[in-house]
Length: 259
Image (cartoon, rainbow, N blue to C red; front, side, top):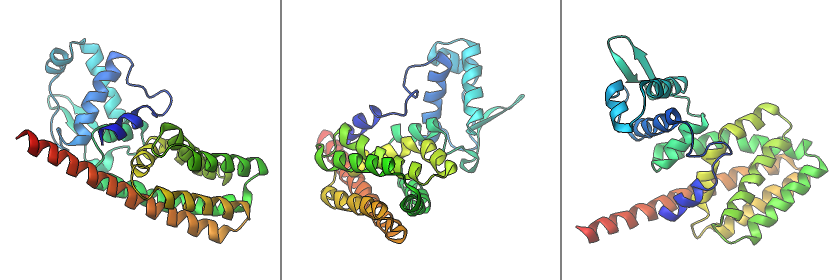
């Protein structure tokens, strides 16, 4: 599990590195605490002086960090009340930082279910449109990504990147700019599903299912592209939960051995 998380972090969305301004670093740490449940909806965050002391930053940096959290829908500040965590329904779940903070804290079952439910709503339809609209260049790009999925070492960064390229190309080939934008928003969430899924014994099946999607798009068969992508995603969801279960068991054994 730890190895998977390390690989995931090396594949972060460009521009979303751990380095940044002091206010961004404070916002990231507070954000991770919020999404992991250290601070629950309705809780009041530590006061400005307390955050200043903990992180050794200026009041300006703390206020900017709180502003960043508020912009993502995580918090709201009121005079004489302080900064409170907002209900989860108000969080911008597609914000790249909010996604990556959840990944950092080990994604919950609820998060994985929600991610795949969204993917199952969007990606099969995108594959069907791609079968109708993909250019020869986009089909060639899909083929190259499929080669990377088949030929790179299982679970390697190169294979995960090929998998990500495959799915993002399907969204691009739909020639619907809104679908492509959604793909960009959920990119960091896709990385975690790919990096977890490739660690399981189902990898060979996943290769076959990617090939089926590619061939349906190449052959301009929209109905089969839809069904093939849906099969792929349902298999991938099972792979991710298998990997999470293995990781949790390993962690439990580690804790038992240390007790």
